Image (cartoon, rainbow, N blue to C red; front, side, top):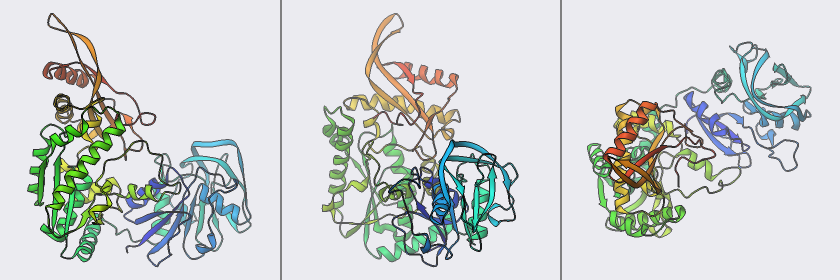
Length: 509
């Protein structure tokens, strides 16, 4: 195992962000729930205690036996983590007189302490807490303050245990990355040697040892995660990997042929399956979004099972699972409430009796892209916008037919090609078009029309958990609207979605 930082999660919305910032320092880290602390092995160099929506004063609030860690490893408590440290050892945590949320400036910083080296007087930090540490135990030193928070940071005497009342992981804490570097590299002594190349070498060695001479089958989507996972597995075992790429009739225009060609140029052993009609039949008459997702998922399972049964000696199922999926499944709060079903090969039934191999399950999405580039996968795949598993099936509101798919493919093609032609594609995290179940009156030439309405959607995001609509230039939107109405038969009105997530979702279904 590489050197790592252990992050104990008390339920904060920012916990994954802490991990991303540590990874940006080329240091490996893992998130574990506070109530499932792993064995402290020699590769763990330090511990970060996350924030929490709970109060340390509440009955039944998250708790931890600090004596398992204190004095054995450097510790950094962030927000709730710092309050828990203070309270457990005799300090006093009380409700803040004024809720402390948002930007603040460190009016006192003692840079003699390693955690705060090279930080500036007046450094901006981000506060987000309803409690404050009023009094510290005798062996705790205050090392930073703001005008309204006396204990903005502390250190326990004669040990490398620190607490901070602000969030260094958010960009609003302008020197937060510096503080995390001071802790992870300076105090914990991590070597900053966890890079894409190191990950690739270690993964290939691990895959070779795990799979041996067995065969692996893997469903590809054309997206980043499955493409990078397949390339890694292929580097390890070559043609023992058999990939299946299914045309469900819900892909973008020409996508099946183009992606299949890309995969073959990458040297992957890919079986292309035209199953369009099977999916259209499964979707006939269904209008409920969840029912559509389930129908698409079930049809995919049937097609994948049929193709897998044609192969001999397959013992493994390859998947493109990434770290946020893993974190969600072991969350402090348990799996989140289901907003909508996610179509993934992970939904394959038990009767397939295959062992699972997931080479990317320690990586975040941006790290997957870095690994993909290090593997020299074409940018067309690496830089591709996320695309929902159910494809255009959930971008056609109401029932799905082959005719509606063809209409939406043409609209989507004009929009996406336009973004690329105008240099806007890489400024957008995800974009697409929705076919609405309404018609509107229009005039084309001297004739009155009554035709379909489409909505365009383009959002900016980091990981899809939150997103905001992109302010595309009016001139661009005007041109795209004009092109769609003139070139796509049956569409006479184009609208642009300016909703953020939350409260809306990125997809409409």
